[in-house]
Image 1 (cartoon, rainbow, N blue to C red):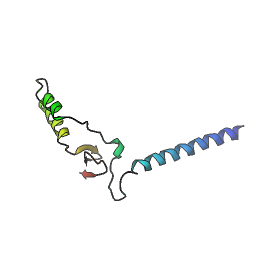
Image 2: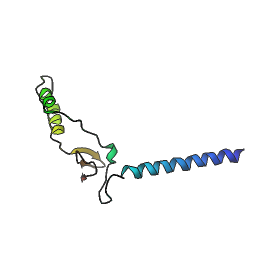
Image 3: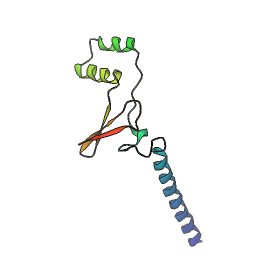
Image 4: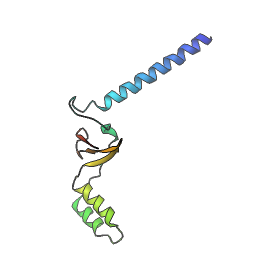
Length: 104
């Protein structure tokens, strides 16, 4: 019976590795082969949609800090998303996470 148990364990390990490989390759499936991908597009932080009225109400709120105002304005203006990567950072397009640029 020991060999049967060992066979199941090896089978589960192989199935686990296959699942991980499939998941990683599927992460880049929506991007072109020529795209230089540094960060998995599924892991790039998403930005919320904000109407001009919502932005105006938040910007004129008395309790908001200048840093928070700049952050919200950047989100509204669709500036690139900056993500730390290695010793530098990666700029990711706000609407197409397959467009990435590494900045050392």
